[in-house]
Image (cartoon, rainbow, N blue to C red; front, side, top):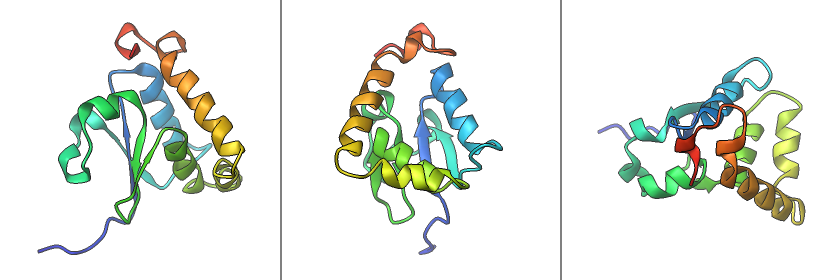
Length: 126
């Protein structure tokens, strides 16, 4: 039995959405170099993390190395905290009271309108 914990957080994004896919791939690129595994939720074993397809289709999810699940802007904050400087600072600020509230509202607006954003398709519409 393998009792080892994962070395990286797991980012679960919607591969049916071009905007989401582009954003997830950007987190792995030279600007962020995020130390998370970016995996489409469609190819992940969601049951292991107590997640559902419906919930993952609504919002970005990140499962941290301790098994904690972060959703929406909180998930983005985790990805940023696991990126190269200056992004960890931005991720930490996103978790501050007031800022977190604003980040959640901004995330909800983007998620609701992702089909209108560059790379978005009709499949992205919630």
